[in-house]
Length: 65
Image 1: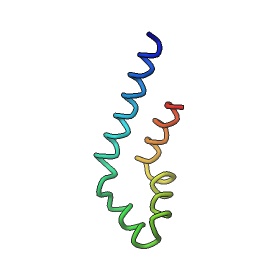
Image 2: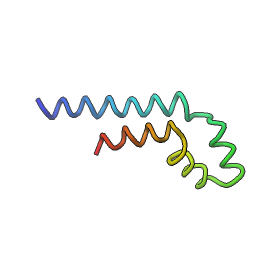
Image 3: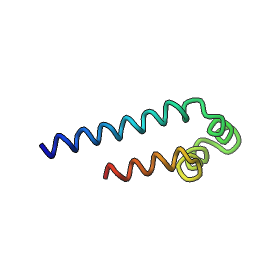
Image 4: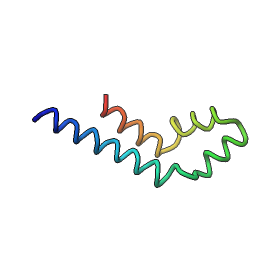
């Protein structure tokens, strides 16, 4: 039973990440702006390290490991 509960929790966490990505990241102005000005790598690093949504996604990810 423990494995089933963990599987449901993992699925719930993945759903939370997907919801964040769909609601905030798709079509993000800041990502597009940084990508155009400084390149894709910089835009990606900005999203991961400085964006509040990226920080939420990282926090959820830490629960998965």
